Length: 376
Image (tube, rainbow, N blue to C red; front, side):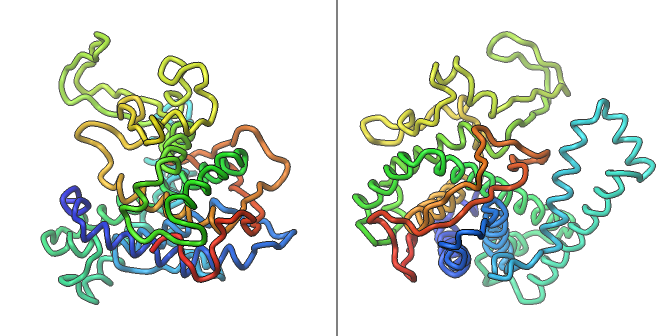
């Protein structure tokens, strides 16, 4: 059902409108408010998480939590979500699964906190459904409304809310955080993106169509190269339903778990060559045109029948935010700078301590005037 809905032109257009609104009305004004302030460092990771939370809530549920208002209000939903993600990931760091299972049985320690967070998440997810039902859903464009026209199972709907929040907020925010960390460390790539934007779109102009965005091959390549080195999901697992044999001849028995590690795969010399640790968007280009690598080599969006349902919408959001901010602002990292970011435990890649930056006006010819959008 989700695959059918997300493939519709209407839902993609609706997502485009939501992202456009969030960029113009909230993200840009927030960064404008701190632009040029020498002593004000803002946590860009937190900003992106708030931006993505507002966007996915509007797109998926038709509700606006307003987490990216200038006052930066704290959402109980988002706080509980972050804590549950962190505590779930920390289970894997225990010496033995028996430890957290015993804690869960006794309802003590982190397992007690996790249970409380999940209870809060489920309660708030149910409120989202109730609100959608209260205000009507039969003529709404958001995903939840489309599900509610054909599904009445409350637990199923609640899990849909949680699943789309996890998939649509944390992953996109993670990619944007890594991308802008790389831009700050690779000004030559930032400059090339802006030159391409001027050539394709024109100086001081915003994108007028989705088709125009497809012509930004270097930006697309830079985004993929960022995800190669810093995938939002650093490792993932699949469980074998029946006895099978992997392509290299390794037998896998029914019920076995097979884990793969996109973070390590992106740094594999065997897969990407001797320059695998270098940030080189050019590796994704052939004669200036973006070239898609085998998804099993680059499993950031999964591959095969389990390919990410929201891939195209996520890419539109990622490139829209990147282009809008790069045209207006120059991002500088708070010193001291590190050559490799540290990550905190979580279901998605999260910079330890956030991404604290100084926001300056973009000095190049691509600078947009206030009120002009890089996404139309």
